Length: 294
Length: 340
Image 1: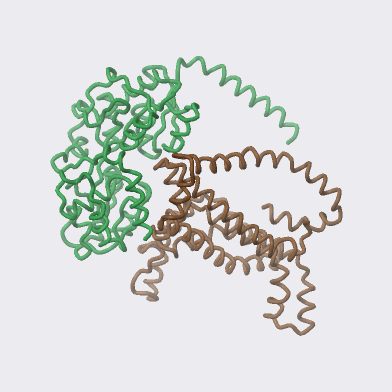
Image 2: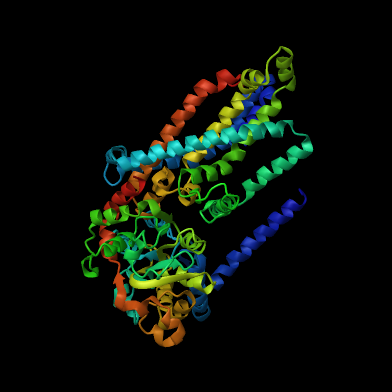
């Protein structure tokens, strides 16, 4: 988890700032080389295909942005990723907090539960949700049996299904970096707030949340960006009215062999994602969080 | 840990050396790629293994078939697949785009003329059939595609194949009263209008296993399925039934990608896999029909009874040539309609 590591490594980096930076660049060379060969070159090839196939020009982009279908799918993709990020935050923050304050024995157990689910095969987990959430599934049967509802709820093949399935999968990616940030917060700051007469709500809002913001931001960004490219879970748990871009790209690449259009779609998604990342860096990154850097 | 490492590396080196040394011992070998699951297992057991035993040519399994990968291999000239199981419309399209090797027709004997062309020979053929869950369907059993659209008599979710492919549009038109011989060219507007009437009740399946899960659990009470999948559910004791009326047939095809390094061995394998004997064994195991016309004489009467080709009277062939021509434009309309 790179984000978790970097936020933990902050003090050390400050102390040996100069020497660490020069050493860091040399140490990074292999990684940079790897990225160049296995990431940058393929992305450029993709871009090239999107403007060269089937004939040179921008017709793939025109088709993509001129078609209601693709625009709708783009919108779905960002909407679903946004909803998933929000719900993951709402569930993840208390979980991370709990992990940070529980006695080690219990927090280890909670960690194990969290990580164990992460190590289980993605497809198996998604199928498990399908079985749990469908109309004849466990959730509906229990609710029906208890008399809470008298008609089974539609919990899969729609936005609810995708959100539940993806939130569950994304949770560790938020909780882990956030937990590291929360652990690094000195508990005495909260005590100090209480001593100064802050209510619980005020300490949360004015002390804890601002201090946790770097962790929240990096975790949320990771969840959002990963969600944008998700394929298996939306395909199995979502209906077609919330079809996401990755599904469409897969169809274009594997089945329709329209690589030009697929390249254009992937490239637009990449650009928008990088743009969002830049915005986040600008407003929540280096300056605001005080996490060293430039 | 550290001390053990060099030894392990040396062992690994030795192992890889011995593999290199062993490779030339086998005269030739080839890679067969198919869709995975029980179907490919049956292909391995009934085609690849006996073929290797008889010819000394090793057949390695790979999969699943991926047309993107297929095209990339041929374009880059680095073809690692020698025989590939593909859908019918892709076979036509790939032939048109020059992605396939021509087949030696003299080696292919007894093949149903519907399933052989210059560059492709049938693998097996299947039907889309109407399937239903006996417990969730009340009254008389659904019998035709129009019952799939009858929300009053058969309420509940219905499940259809998700991606733009031959099948769904055809059955919608049949349900709307289009005669089988007037299906093509497809009246796409009419098909979508018919599908609109059940759109809110459709659950889409993306693969065979999911379709089985949806039907067996009762999540969907009715739907379209590959006949082999219903066959397998019935064998496992699930309360499901199927109707063969207007079953929609299509064949998977076997092709050799252009630039395959083991063309001669691949051709030998094709001849074996489509032989009456090998086709009969595969059909007996899977419930999919043989493409070799002589195979039925080599099967038990009970096994023959469950094959799609017992229902030829009510059978409609999906027009793969039409789909090969129009797949792109249909896909555009399809996803526009689905995401609405």
